[in-house]
Length: 60
Image (cartoon, rainbow, N blue to C red):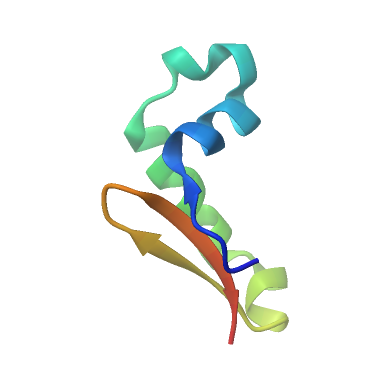
């Protein structure tokens, strides 16, 4: 938590060997849905974007 995870790492973890076929749009849609997830909101987590780098999960 708090560490920045690169987009490439997320692609590999989520889509595995199919990550070459995944698009930035697919990742953006996934992050959008995760940000709306009730668990994150209920427990005070947010997903921060770091342009051209990746994402970080932060508890506020």
